[in-house]
Length: 281
Ligand code: PAF
Image 1 (spheres, rainbow, N blue to C red):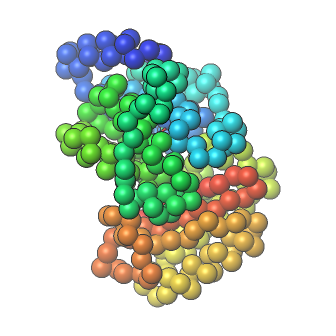
Image 2: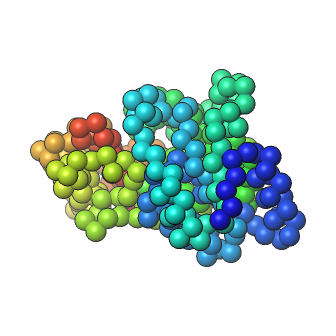
């Protein structure tokens, strides 16, 4: 695996690879890698692309600065994991490479409705920061395929919209299934901050999603939502939202509509850790 820290160096390398007929598969990350990230690298390799991963903890997407300070960093272990997954290139820029002249001088995008609901409503400015950094990374890497995890469903929709706004319709956005622990907990870099007792109850989020899914033909969503909120609270979570939406555009639904592709989404906090997950119905 080749590691680059400077835009110029990775540009030269990637241009040479593309001139030699390689197509680029890109996996953007903030490090603290787990099997979910590695599944994206493996998919990029299976698709025959040159797998490029970035590790950059983007300060502009943290609306809570404490969350940024506590974001886990494990660079040595990440490099080992990427090598074992067959990653070809790792890009690890510093803030100055991504935001020369400061983030305030770097282009941002308006995601409209998508930024007003769920994560957008709970984390003001978060998607603006995500859009800003992903736009920069796409400008630098210029991939043919971009690999994202379904775990961040709303982020997948925001980034897909970003690629449209950037006129990158040729680039394929590949959304890969959420990887789960054996008890169903969605893999996330935040999981490593859970205490042992918190980790024991954390799979309740997954169980709620399964219950929302399994009751779609028999239940009223309002009733199932209340059951989930009560269950989450009983296990020590503070639910942020338990929501049902049209999977194509994230328009929120009051009740099940089995004529529509649906997605159930949950965000809940336990102690200081906020976890999110979703399930297609
Ligand atoms: O999902 C993440 O890790 C980040 O939001 C991303 C897409 C790498 C942008 O910083």
